Image (cartoon, rainbow, N blue to C red; front, side, top):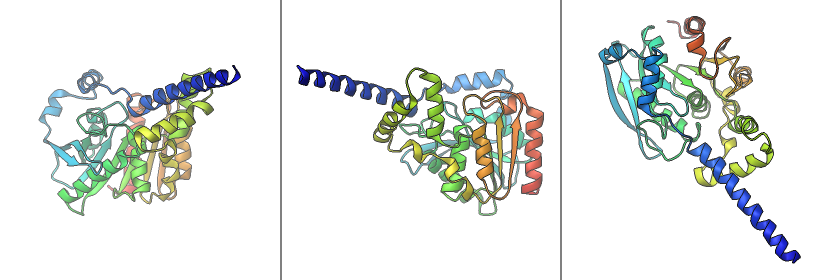
Length: 305
């Protein structure tokens, strides 16, 4: 009877572990994405996209091979006959079209733009989302492609939002990035720390100390990476180029202390803009004038425009 009882408990425990691990890893690796047309409709309504202006811009859709074994869908927007470019890396669940609200800022400052779909988003391939672990190699591929197309005398910046900001920092710090400056809007500092916080918010009656190790084990088996492999704060001190860090003080999805920690850890040239209004990834929408001033101060100080 005792043996049967132990076997029954073991079966229940095994089923629970499998259920928790599968659910957690599925949420992480296959997070539900927004439909691209819904993104376009949303941003048109918010006046981030002017359909007439966008249609009149000189642009070219390109496909860039990823070292991860699929094609990266990108678009080059080039109204200027110059070699000043900014690449834009969007956030999780979004697509390259959601970067247009930032593109407009830099077009107004004389830059051309490259927008691209991150891994498993938009029209880009890839089976899983890895929050920068694999995505940093795609960003590297886009950067290298642009240098080949435009030449080594290219002046290049990279702007990233949320997951795209974390990807940007991982590219810059871990892969010795080639851009001349970086702007990161609401990045997380460490994926495991972020998911610990978010798990506590979602599963109030289940300790994250139990969920995270199980979930991480399943992510590693199913996704090929560990949560603690995705840690911008571990590599930010290697970034030699200037970085502008941006975050909203009211963000409750990725907490603002993460950007403050990244800023403190970064050595050398850097600036910090903490927006007063708006939730996650809303710093531009809710603080446009101050956001633009922060960009102008950064460019004037470190890019010498």
